[in-house]
Image (cartoon, rainbow, N blue to C red):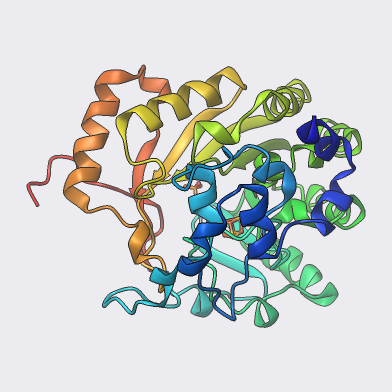
Length: 335
Ligand SMILES: *Cc1c(COP(=O)(O)O)cnc(C)c1O
Ligand code: SF4
């Protein structure tokens, strides 16, 4: 019932009413005893919309959704090899707000804001204020694409590109659609899981009218993130002609079991989404406790190959600075 009330509100109200208080979150989940383990770093506060909290199990301290958002003491631990900018992104932007690392596609960080703060996020230390495209940067980006005929796809990312309102988002779509060489516009977003109502009719209508192919890569780590309502919204997006893919991050004690991965793939498929990437964790400072060692990741992957049809097995990849693609993990390696 509470769930129903939350999810009927328009997405912008849901966005502004996200939980930012640890005490409130723990009280809703009846987990006040966890308070002592919480630590909130100044640069990356707690933030979680109520529609996402509603998918957590009350009283379960090991809930896989809770683990992704509850700041933990372990974030303070300094672990060698885990750094602020693991992908050296701060140095790979020819224009403010744009990354051009991969030959045929550029990635735009059109906002630094996210509806949810995921504790393992590799962009948690990213300097968005120095990397946000301004109005004039938008024109520079369009010009840059024109000067690089090899680019045929633009990825809107962030932060979360669906965190911006439709007016601003549509202005980006208008600008990109006017560039004849672009065939595809892609959105990398976690909002369909976090506030499903973000996939509102105006947005889906606009996407269905695009002259470009629209790809939406959602970011779902666990089957529990897709309840019935979420699945319904995803199906609507699909009906609007959007190609839906998923990228997940392999996270210790969240989704690092065969069972969790199989369920995730099956639930995604039942909602019209195909698994795309399974990323091993980017070694960002504060997230070492989410990392699973390479040997067990590879073993897990072999089990997935047996358990799932090929089209439901995501590509297991690692992102490395200075590589022009996501690097496949060598599952034959003996390390
Ligand atoms: C991940 C990423 C892309 C997209 O990679 P695909 O393999 O096409 O999904 C593009 N640019 C940057 C900078 C990226 O990090
Ligand atoms: S939604 Fe994506 S960019 Fe935002 S905090 Fe989570 S992982 Fe990071």
